[in-house]
Length: 117
Length: 115
Image (cartoon, rainbow over all chains, first blue to last red; front, side):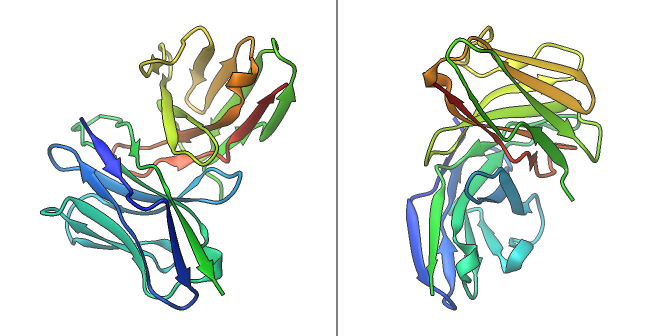
């Protein structure tokens, strides 16, 4: 069965320091991987995706993520955290269905990022 | 600009009332939309896949007669929570996607509170 694990409920980091939010996945084949951010009482905003190609993916707001196939990981990173980055972050995976397919997203449990001034 | 419009954003109603939530795709025609439910401090749970012109596909454990989905046009899907009870109180979110390797675009969600 497909699954996504975000092992940390919360990550605390000081403003200006680098941040990492971890994600590992379990899915057969070549997955599509996504990171989303959610602010209170809002829907999810897309940050970045990995489909194929370069393992290092750059996304919105200075975030990036590295796809590691051998470790089945897709950790989210940012070199210098901002207080405004404080939010709930979700990793998600979908399995390619081939042409014409719409795939369901499987979400991790979410990681709350708290950036302190 | 917004890709998905979800309305209403907040609903408070009495037990036994039916509540309709609308999800509109603003930028493209969406043959498929997704409906999620999110409990406080938890992840999103996919409830159903809404298919334009055909029946929705519900996830295991989701009551079809309780959560009615209608996808009558390429830009609008509705979720109706029928005879809502307090345990139906939750945050409901819809999403649309152009293709399976494209990110889903999410609405801002509807917070449903049943008294």
